[in-house]
Image (cartoon, rainbow, N blue to C red; front, top):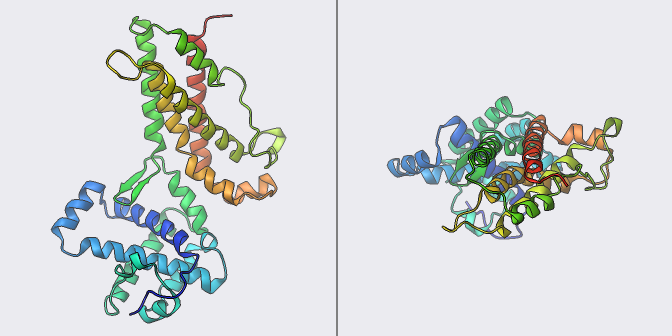
Length: 320
């Protein structure tokens, strides 16, 4: 079947992003194919890698097809609708409606194999609906990006903020122990960097200027997450400017800044998504629809980590 030629549907790049995410979740969480197992499995089972790529491409085709048929953006299609439309799609219909990028054309199954691949895609959609979210595709993607444990396949790494937070806490405990045992003498450069973090002052939630503060004057979740991502960038930048030890390794403060900053930056993809969607809506109603509970949990946990780090930094600065 012919799947190339003509103008590429502008929905395609977004659909492929979501297809990669959903297939990555399926491969590790449902099939138990970690990155190492997936490589081994693909090597022992002839055609496995090609089949997985075909399922990813066909899933993207189903997302584009549903979006086009229902007249909605890819992010706004309901997963239940995609599953329903997916079962009505056949190879020739897909070929007539879609024009795939040249790099994807070889990842489409033959006409005879198409129903089997489509059934695997429908099963994936059913499982995501049952186990993750039955809402809009964009909302489901944000839930998966906020996965605390994370999942990793050859197509990328998603989630994993809990491990990063736990690692940062471990680094803070280690640094406190070094101070107590006299293994770390806090330098003037360390104190200057601690002051420049801004964590010794009250937090400021000034971006985005809208959404307006939440109920009773509290900042919105989007403002809180934005502040954490911006802080993460600052911490990582400051850590790189600190002098290294005689062996060329990062010092204790730089190590803490890098780990805490990395945990803060785990929210970056979600913040970029929410920022793109945000368009001056009422904060309360908009966030109720667009900010999953999983993102709230991640934001709260990261804020707790940052507060603990701020307390530690305050102890590095002598009373002035």
